[in-house]
Image 1 (cartoon, rainbow, N blue to C red):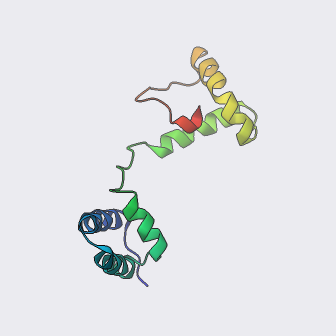
Image 2: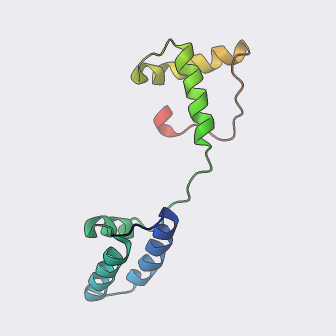
Image 3: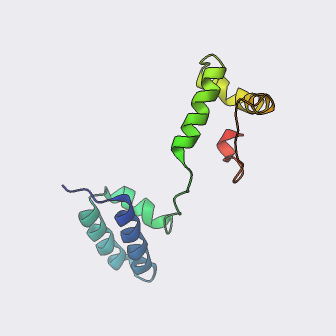
Length: 115
């Protein structure tokens, strides 16, 4: 079985979701079978993708920069475990920024799972 790229899959799901919107049950079943065959997705996963609507835009977040900043914070905290590091990040960022060890630019608010 050949896999398709994420971008192609997102485009395919978007097009198929538009086709599904106006169809009856038999049409939706046929469309779902086609999507599963073409994309290689499991039928249940394809149903969930279609139900959730068009795929969200991928964030323009530079994960390498985030990773580097996290490594700096992790090293500064003497390689503390992730659960404790999560709670310590705001304190570390403020202290390291105040002392000139870390320079961050704020482009947008932090994701809710970091709060």
